Image 1 (cartoon, rainbow, N blue to C red):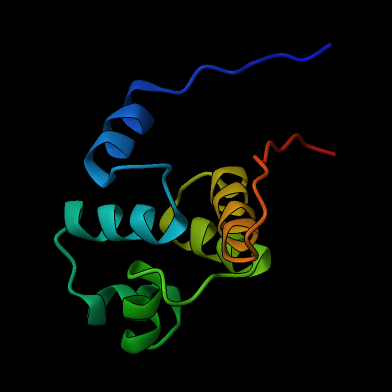
Image 2: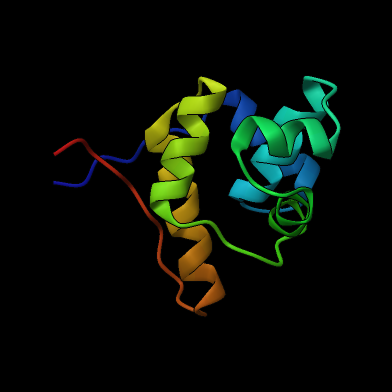
Length: 105
């Protein structure tokens, strides 16, 4: 049996703003902008370089699921959501049209 989950109003709103499915980079950009952090401040919080944050936000680099989970912990957000977005980004970059859904093991 397949259960279809409804997207939250927040996700729908963000996807409307970005013009498509939400990526981890766009999510990080949104968080950074809402908190009014510079890329330099944000990079320090996440333990990466400013140029790496810029590349992630612009979609030039994808983040591993492990790093996505670490980012979520440092920012106080859902690990599952960040990991799902990281996996989705990896599939998209590979040209594979699949949708990722996670459940706890």
